[in-house]
Image (cartoon, rainbow, N blue to C red; front, top):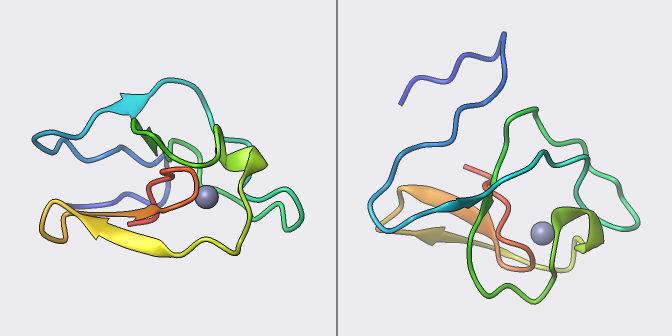
Length: 79
Ligand SMILES: [Zn+2]
């Protein structure tokens, strides 16, 4: 997939993956890691309700045979 870094990120269309609507301001309660505009949260039962309430203690995990990388705390697409 081509990513145009001049504009907002466009989430990949992947079978079985759906995204929560709404922008992400930042990632992590302490770090406030910057998140590229357009980055989306994969819908799922994550320990943290939103990236803004997540923490850097969570690892990342590839889903769908390596098609998408998400934070295991909040489901933020980190691909
Ligand atoms: Zn997270």
